[in-house]
Image (cartoon, rainbow over all chains, first blue to last red; front, side, top):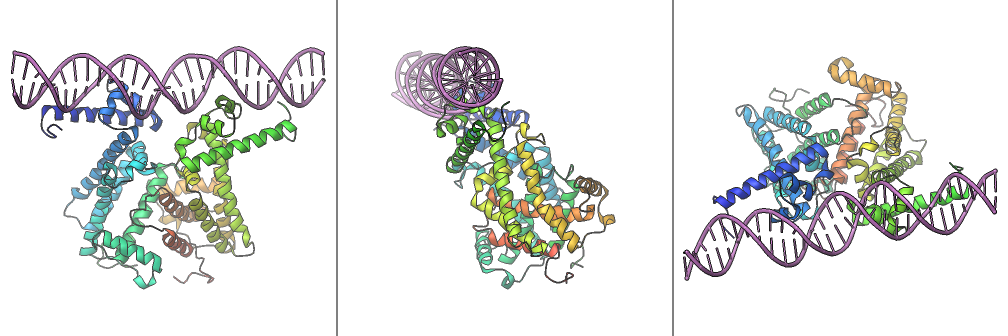
Length: 241
Length: 241
DNA sequence: TATGCTTCCTTAATGGCTCTAGATAACCTT
DNA sequence: AAGGTTATCTAGAGCCATTAAGGAAGCATA
């Protein structure tokens, strides 16, 4: 192995990688997922086919790498929204991050499709793949914000005794998995909110709502205000429901 | 064109079509979406490649036809659950149909993936494609039940004046689209419930919840009881919330 | 400076795919 | 029996992913 950072070769390699990723994205956006073939990408960057195998071991790996890019870009957009008003309360920053997520998804539907609706190739199941790592960092954004909210102004949670045992066990495991930063019942509220938000976005981007809506934005906003209520973000010190 | 029904030829053709669909499904389930190629399907039914083009004009059309099958099978499963206790109140039958939907999706994840997460090929965008027609019949099941519920024991709806204008306009259009069987504000409640349910199922089947849950069933049940509350299905004549 | 290793790229080739074209047999109607 | 229809075949063009084998250029060290 040569110098992995800094050297001229390494810089050139990075530039080539960036060019390859750019070509993949262009093909995806302009001609759809099926147009992203090794050969087409290679042609696009002025190489001939097999040369790409010096950068990625397979078509799947290339797709996984670019999908990780998309994940990171989405994450960055949400972090930027979160940090735009760093002094605002956690609740406001949660909403900002959620809106940023949808804005990115709407602006980049093809990319979001790869992030979300991809069958997740076997090679990307291993948790050390770039794709999985980017996914974990993505999840952290809203989790971090929710933890902060929980610590500064805890939201109402159900009595754990009211949760069915199988659910409670899974929540306990998840709570441990995030190092106890949320207790199981708070994790439950977090996951519930997250599922509603992400599920709605997924349906919108996959065109499952076309039969009823031409513009999902108000639906999304209503979902957000539902969540604000669940998380007691309504400005008052205690919810006045 | 020869006789389109009844004749011996027509019967043979139907049998061949069924065999083709069966081969597609077997390949999909056992080896994944990518294994469903024209050639592999043809081999499976003992034909050689191009012969399939006498039944379908393209790979996309074949996939669309089988996806429509899946849609119809899912619809039938829900209708069966709905009709199993034809004398039960509409609310109970709604819940039964929802559970049947999830049961089918869990039992047939690959098929559900085609129904839900397929990019919807351009040829299937036309509303007369078998795929779209099956989709419409599918939507009707829960819509019919909700209409019946609305007529027999109306659920609480928001004041239309509280809905933002853009949303209200879309709901009015949708209400007209379903021939006014639900007024816009009731349609809003229906769509909201529908989105939560379908969105959750979609996330489960696409493995987007694996990071937190190993068994989504209790989450689904909690979602259902949320919906039961929204639709005031709780047995009392009026919700006691 | 000369030698050899590494990196990047090429062409050639294999075997798969979709889909078209043309030919052939078998079947149905008249 | 004749003519049209239907179902199938083989051949082939033009894609694709991937492997193999080799060449040129940069870099490092003797």
